[in-house]
Image (cartoon, rainbow, N blue to C red):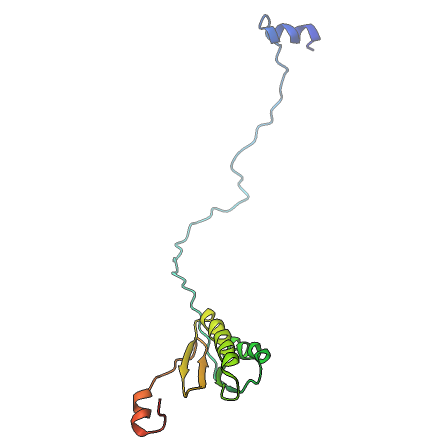
Length: 146
């Protein structure tokens, strides 16, 4: 066994410490109990995530807000992927502008579409609905005069 003085001598470099006997058990890296694993070919799939919102029951909601407080409910319908027709004819010009700005800002964040029907009636559609503009055809028939 090494004494304190032997350790100091070893630290200074005068004497080597006696190595303690070490007992090591022999072991094998290979165990016969396990079967050999055969590598198989894996097919790398090119997974692309695509957001598809299919809705067989598409709804159109008509809103005729009388105050600015009703604007968030319109955005809620758009978030539920419903097409919204908004009639702003009953409102003063200042409130019309505020409601329109609020709805169009929310719709912009959802990447939706806006289509003007008349001076104060608009169609707001979420991104899953495409508004096909047949404005010229309707104008030629005299249905809308904008």
